[in-house]
Image 1 (cartoon, rainbow, N blue to C red):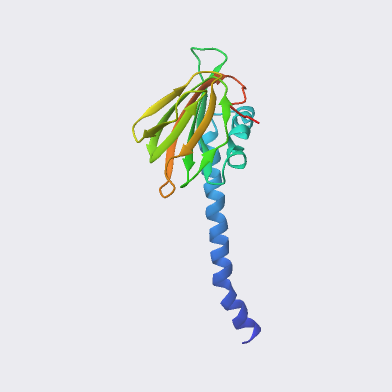
Image 2 (tube, helix red, strand yellow; image 1 turned 60 degrees about the vertical axis):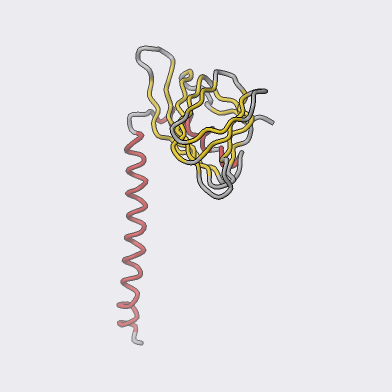
Length: 167
């Protein structure tokens, strides 16, 4: 194969690599664009404790920020919304949240236990509430074969660390 034909053969591979890189860049830009109404301080303050979940729980859970908004009628308070996805068998380490949290199950079944209460299982369309300062001892996918997902809505003080993992 001549140097000229080798270069021609490598062009489609390079073009595909560039296209994949460009698509990845666009995806990141879209994600950042969705967060533009949120200040950088808020993003870093809200995301750091949330993104730590996978490292602090099982490798089978994921927290994805959806939005965070100051509450203009309640000075000093912010509402933050996240999607928590659990692969089969996924769970989060015991933790506590700043402020109040309402969780709404969108896929599968979630096992949950607050403080010394009973372990409960919630299915699609059900929700549960975590009062401020409560200890969330169990937060897990109830299935070892199907994924589960919930949307969590936090109402907490501006700048608060939303999740604190327990030792």
